Length: 198
Image (cartoon, rainbow, N blue to C red; front, side, top):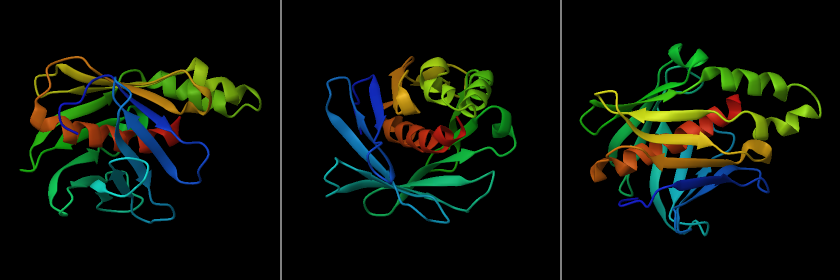
């Protein structure tokens, strides 16, 4: 996923039983098809080159199951780890907080939810029959990736849609090409986790 043409769109499939989505760039070209394995105690995600699922480019694997502070490792086609994203436990209960770690086990970026109240209202309205189908149009959380200086590099935003199935990743600041993969995989994992929470 090098030299990505932003913005990138994540679109979840609602016609399948699996938790899966496609990622397309600004030209409409598919850059990844992401599929989460069902009924696994530990998260196991395959990132394919396209929907044919003929070639796995990356794997994302959790180091624990059912834990607040889980690390999700990024593996290349040879099974070599080149980074991870870590969900920061209790800090993420109110406001989502993740850290992107490089291949040398050093923190490179953080991902924060911009406004946690959006998620709260989304969840509350989602409990009301009939009105729950409109939450995808009323409340749309967004997340920002910041570098070590606190500058925003990338923004992920849930777009207005039924079933909350569309997300957009836009580049805000300067992005190092060597970090494209780690940032995109971290956001893919975040979307799979946070989408369940509202």
